[in-house]
Each structure stands twice: as C-alpha cells, then as structure tokens.
Length: 141
Image (cartoon, rainbow, N blue to C red; front, side, top):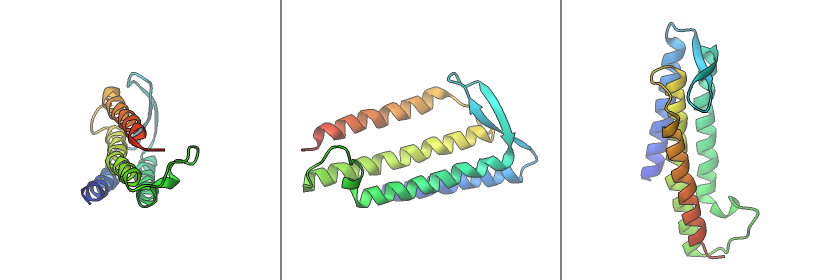
C-alpha cells in the first residue's frame, strides 16, 4: 500500500511540475542531454506533458504486473509458488516508485528547476538492476 501511495504522489508531482512549466513564461524545455549531462537539444514547453503521461502509463503497466507477476517474465518459466509470488510482487513494489522517481527527476530537469546529475539516475538504475539480480536468484524455478 505504501508503494502505491508513493507512486501516486510521484505521478501527481510530475503532473504539477509539467503544468507549472506549461503555464510559466518560458517557452522551451530541455529535451536531451548527453552522457555527461550536457544539454544537446531544446524543444517547445508543451513536450513536457509527455513525461507525466508516460509515468501514468508505466504505473498502470507495473500495477498490472504486481497483480499478475508471472506475466512479467515470459522467456523463463517460473514456478507458481507462494514464495515466488511474494518475491516478484515485492520486486515490482520496490521498483515502481523508483522508476517513477527517475521520471519525476527528468521532468524537473527538463523544466529547468534543477540541473541534471547523471549519477543520480545511474545510482537508481544500478539499485534496480542489483535488486533484480537478488530477486532472480531468490526465486525457485
């Protein structure tokens, strides 16, 4: 339940940042950065609404996988056991707010509220990957 509340609050914050940017006087947002965080492309401020929409769609997809975790991995067959179900649901519950947090961070950076620090995104992604490996090894096949 805490994960769902956190995820919904992050999506609401992403929408608020996007709407504030659209209403503000600035006409451009940052569309792209290179690997080191240098700005490489600007665009119209209306593109910022794409990020909260992506966040919402992604949340709904991950919510579906939380309810049906065995549909996540179609390549390797995971035995449908109570312990595997719990491990997969926990993985989705932990990673969903983190992925949405990345999208909120990118929205804040695109709207030029804060400067992009690629290390923050990389750190969250590395945690998600390590947690995936941990969960994958814990699951019984």
